[in-house]
Length: 78
Image 1 (tube, rainbow, N blue to C red):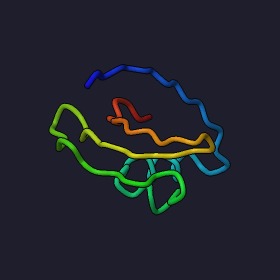
Image 2 (image 1 turned 120 degrees about the horizontal axis):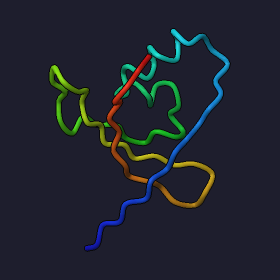
Image 3 (image 1 turned 30 degrees about the horizontal axis):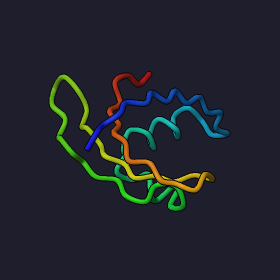
């Protein structure tokens, strides 16, 4: 089986306070509660430590006729 890396950079405008958005992104395991039609599965793959946050595995879908499995690690939040 071959693995390919495809970088996706996403910019979103959200009509909420910066504090509310930061709170949601600070707990990625809770993403299915906010967007259940998009986030099919969210799991912690590796716990975070003092130097970095947890590595999160996601299974998502959008309007296209396929799903994506990808990983997320928040590296900066201000």
